[in-house]
Length: 505
Picture (cartoon, rainbow, N blue to C red):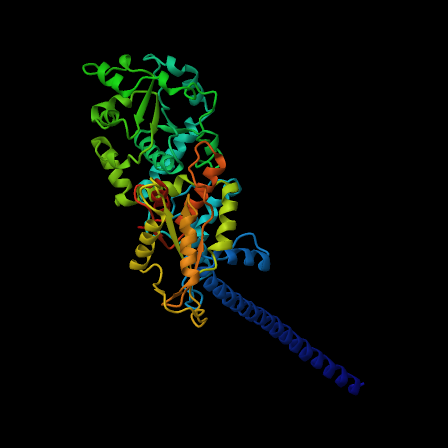
């Protein structure tokens, strides 16, 4: 019996030891399993970081191609390329959170854009940052606050709102007894080519901000499919049933209010609608527009219809009541179109698809993109060869393209793999063909590979043609994505391209 008791006692001790040992083993296994899991996670992150690092290195050279590759390989809907990363970004220990914040900041252009707009309605608004370098020109906080205020005004007073319907119902019958003038309107009427229309539209939008008016645009059919709607939950399109859609010549001009109000500026003498004709040929009207006393009168008119073909922003600084606001919005006056143009003009989904395809096929893979925009106003006075010679001299003097080795006929060696693409934009095919012939038949002294691409050559400018404007807007945008630009002076086409890109041609 004692032997049995000893055995049982030994068994109990062995069982307790086994239980303790098992608990220790379980704990150790759990801890180590967690550690192994964490190590695997860190190792996986390291691998992904290395892959993303390589991706970003490639992305700096070819953002569009990387975006498509990542979507295919990683099965993600959002690209992981972060614009502006250095090649050793991940090696320097930058965390994903800060990169994500920078990514969102770039996407909204440093706060310039409204984040509440649906991305699917305008894909270009949220993808454009992937295709161009981050701007060195940052919008002021005051400009951003003015834009947010304007967006609220547009939502409150835009088409088909209660205030809009009341104002349009009165139309030209608006009288001094109508004291509900919380919503006032500025109707933009297009004129001339696309470049002129865009520079005028930016000017008109700024004037709307300064005067607390709602901007409405009266686009013809050749402008309807170019741009996304710029404002959230509201349209900037003037409805066709508006009394201001028809012939604007029925309304009075600023000359009338100047004559009627020399001594009495009460609303009794003011018409409900006025036309502001700021075309470059109407100098007298423009001078009246810039008088402070006339601006005071215009503030009392419910609806203004503005027609122009000029960039009249600089002259707004002549009006003393605007000057303080303008200086606070734009400490650097050179950036006005750059900021407002990037805010307003986003390619429609149809145009954006076209831009993406051309960019990825012809521009994305090269080390450097050089845009050359040629506008010839009189083809009889300027021979094609003379203009081509000017272009060659310009790009070589400014070291945009290398000089040629005219004596060698050998094929260029492949030891230097630097390539440049020249995007030629012109109505005429001759300039793209001449550049292509020169650089394909001669070896550059720097042994660089030079490619030349010209998307279209319409030969003549077409007015009222929607596809002509689609091509024009596409090529303006592609020019704005280039690293350097050569543009024609006096050409609004070139002005818009370099201003959107924040470049000095």
